[in-house]
Image (tube, rainbow, N blue to C red; front, side, top):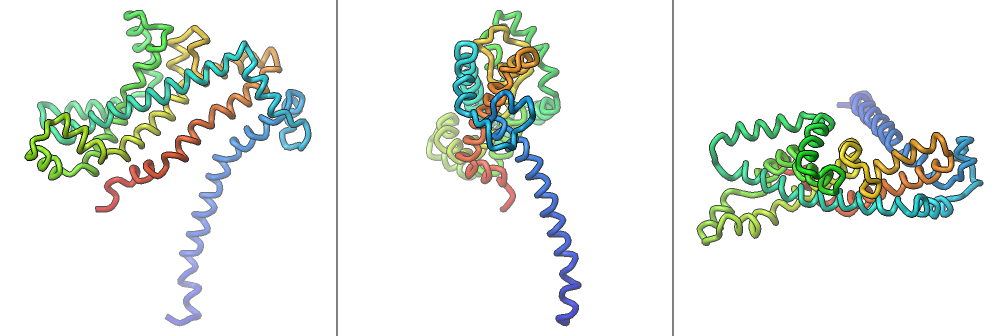
Length: 288
């Protein structure tokens, strides 16, 4: 190929690269612009927000908004924040352990109707969580758990998609030969799982944990159905009630926006701290 033909040959590749960069840039803007608006709006007072003047350099009131946020309704936002951390962090941790253990069992053990049961798990993945809210409410009502911590905490412990991911990670990370060697050494099934398989499933645990942490933190409909005591609300439901009140009392707008900004931080911190395990987990089985 001559040098004069080289630019023509490379032109489709260059155009393809430009097109990919444009698409990626649009995706980044679509993702970051709302966050940027939230950051800027959290620094403005009520009058600037009423004028939609979030780009001006004046009216800086972030620390005042922050103080008002934790002072509003006798510090109720702090209670909501702690509730969300408890629901999400503890719930996601237990859910990840349960999901990975179930996925490991589906992968490594043979039992009757295994594939049929796993098919039911896959079918449950396609069921929207909002559809399950009413049956869960009726079950909680029958057991006296409505308007309690457990009515929101127990349902989030079971994640069909996490079970599916647990089986995939078990297939990719836990060789059968290692388990056979552990059995020859006299290890019991429970000890073998805890000491041999579970450390290998670390990336899977972190991946399921992050998915479930995001789902529980953003969970809105289930707490709205189950809870009537505002002291048990998570952040998502609490901010919704304040936002409804803002239609009558505009003083709620700055605290709602500032509270929304703080509500994003735990998810960002979790992804930044655990991204190494998460990224390695997502590529499980990609390279043999």
